Length: 130
Image 1 (cartoon, rainbow, N blue to C red):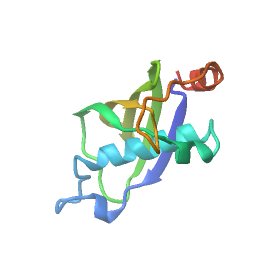
Image 2: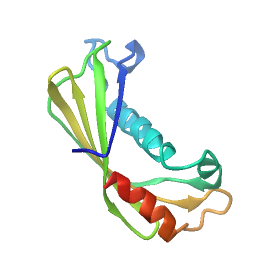
Image 3: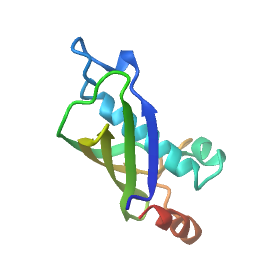
């Protein structure tokens, strides 16, 4: 069972002319889920102190997701590196898996860009998302 679930309706501006979610917007859904998952473990200060640039992403698309359907994102960490997080996102619509995404982010200091390794306390908190 995934460690974090995020749901919301698909907005009109996220779809193409056929009413299907534009492929790149699946990454926006995954990023929203990631933000909410991290916020559930951290304080808002975390987002001011650190940046989380992506160093790798990939996606497999399985079925269309359409305007005004409820999208559910199951976000789970697959690995906690020294200063990186490896994510898996499963995005579903009503009764079907629509996309599977993976992403790796590398935590950096927001003001200087240097790598920002996770402390043992942070690793323990992040383990809840494994």
